[in-house]
Length: 341
Image (cartoon, rainbow, N blue to C red; front, side):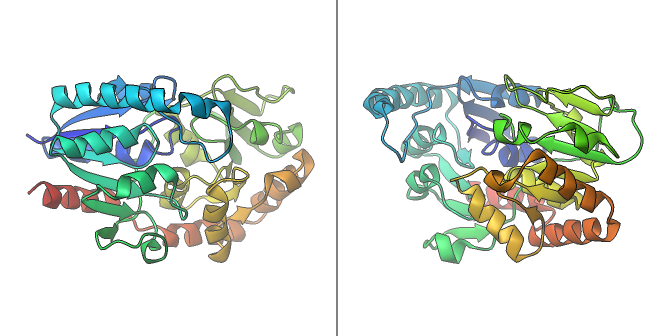
């Protein structure tokens, strides 16, 4: 039985593609364990999938000046010690990562313990955590066919982004008519929350996922449904949505592509998401708006335009679907088998 450690967390961006692989790995009789952060949202979704979870300190390599850099040596040393102890106990044959700083010490020490390492690159722009991981990786997989431009290594395979089974398993929504789904990723997005207005509820039901600890809209309306977080219920929300308003993380975009959803994308300012959004614009695969240029009324008008134009929604969804390879999970399982031979 292969022992596999998945490492990632802090946000769900580095978690969702690996979590999509878990059922496939379990079908192949692998023993899967997860190493993540103490405070990120990943623990409940990982344990909800029946996977053992161990938290460690997540060092944060900031690109900007911060007094917290003074703590970095201690944080990284402690994360190395924790990773060493866990890996000595788990003795994995393979370490999988899709980014996140919590994965870096696990990957490095996994190699020391003789494990194979596969690192998955989701975004158009390579993040620092993955750059620190690539040099020990046996295989680098990519969600997009851009590796020749951004990763100058021989061991790169374009796989697409693994996507979980999105068939709804819950029945918590009973409304009829058009549905707008608004969310900002696994930890929410205060910037998007501030754009939600009662105007959105005029001709549709709004499902708004605010993020834990983040404020919902200040109005009340029978067509406004709000949650801090959804797990399995998110599949039902996605299935019902006619228009989705969200960030530009690749995990989210991959799921929208699989479902051929029309989306209004508001990338997180000053991050890699802006390049992801640029790619969508080039392929006419979504409506992309910058957060600073939007007002609640402008967003409501943009949503209303899409709701009134079924052909535009179909075209956007089909273009997004065409941008991402499908049936990636099985292909990824084959790569893992080949790596472990």
